[in-house]
Structures are given as C-alpha cells and as structure tokens.
Amino acid sequence: MRSHRRLAAALGVRMSTSPARIILRTSVTATFPVAVLGACVVAAAGAGAGGGMYLTQRGVESVVPVSVDRAATATTRAFDELKIHQTKSATEQEADGEQREVEGTAGDREISVTIKAEQTNSSRVQVVAKKSAVTWDKDYARTILDRIVAYSR
Image (tube, rainbow, N blue to C red; front, top):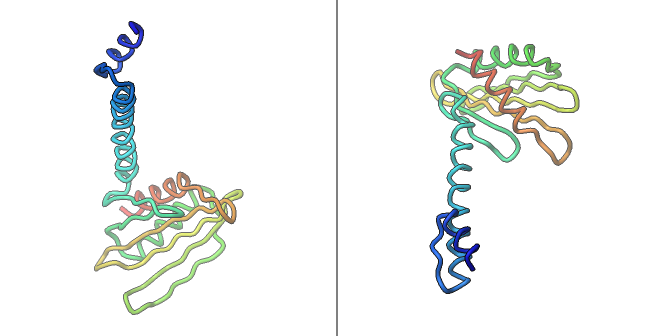
C-alpha cells in the first residue's frame, strides 16, 4: 500500500479508498496533458502558412493572400526546389473564379496541387501527396505547401 501512495503522490493523484476513483483520477490526469499537447501540435503545424494551414482528409490546404497566377508560379518554383517532376498543368475558368491544377511525381509519390481563387488577391491552395491508392503523405504535402507559401511572398 505504501508504494501505491508514493506513486499516487508522484503522479499528483490523491489516494482514496475506492480503486475505481484511483483509476479514474489517474486516467483523467494522464489524458488531459496529451489532449492539450495534441491540440498544440495541430496549431503549430498550421502556423507555417501565414493565414493558417489546415489538415484535410488526404493532405493540407491554406488560403494564401496572393492571386492564382502568383500561387501557380510559386508552385512551379516549389516543385523545382523539391525535385518534383511536373506532369500536368491545367487552368479552368469557373463561375466562382479561376482554378489551376498542377500535378507531378516525386519518387513513389503522386503530387497534386489545386489552386482556387477565393476573393480578390486570395487563393486557396490544396496539396495532396499520394503514396498508394489508400495512403497519403501529409508531412510531405505540408513541406510542399510551406514552400509554395514562402515563394508566393
């Protein structure tokens, strides 16, 4: 019993007579910092893109305060720097503005960048780095988006 009290004191858990209370207090105490740190990691990941970087189901996206043209030029520069072989570039004029698609390959990854006009001189840039039919490399997509944001300034 003495070792349990020392462990509880080290963890900042108050001992009680009920084992269920000990388990509950310990799990709440241990879980709370993990949840808070997890939120900090997501917030820190988004800090690199200026206005905020958002994780999507398959990649990352950000709204960049530049025109679609400038974001497309920045994408080409980022592809060159990261040794991504560009395989496709397409422009579409939609009712809500211009959209560009730039695709390429880097090793075993297929890279897709979609740039859509948001507002005046603002573009939504979405990057997907596909490894296989069911897996995506969000870290590499984030690296690409970071470079696009840096070159668009």
